[in-house]
Length: 106
Length: 149
Image: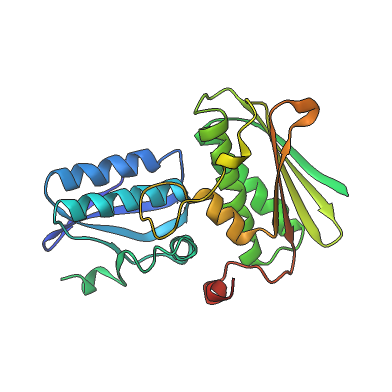
């Protein structure tokens, strides 16, 4: 699984789609860390995520921490209801910067 | 108790999606609300993932058996593996204030299921996780209920 990467202003955008579980979260993690290694500010679009498990959430947390160490911006955008349920149960909805849509990201 | 379904699968990540699909179908047949259904799918996925990662250590030919039982108004889920018995004291969630990757699966399971028991496997072989969900119970994972749990 290779997730699409696009550009939105000063951000690179990785769009996760479908069911993000242990079978594909390693690829999501790899793409997130690769963009951050290239010094890119990063948005993770979760609008098309139908399901995400704790391995997918771990990839997001690792991206968040890596970005912070590198003084890069890292945020989630368009978080689907399914993804927000998991983030909320893990009390991570107050940790990540979350935008409703790409239009809200400057 | 009445057994509803029994599923055998191997300890591979690509088996998780068909397992989730089976859980969704069975939970719908049992009249689960959409909220309870999401909770059950999440908890069972996390539990099976823990077996793959921590009991079988990502070895992909371990056997896992998932059973669904109905007990009055409860749905009981049993997950058997045949790996080395796991130290139950090591099964715990991380502190949620300690923000780091991993360690959330056990927390998510406890957040949405009504009862969780770690038991010896049959004949002392492997591990058995039994989870119970009261259908129509209060412990649901709707966002507006999070503060109440």
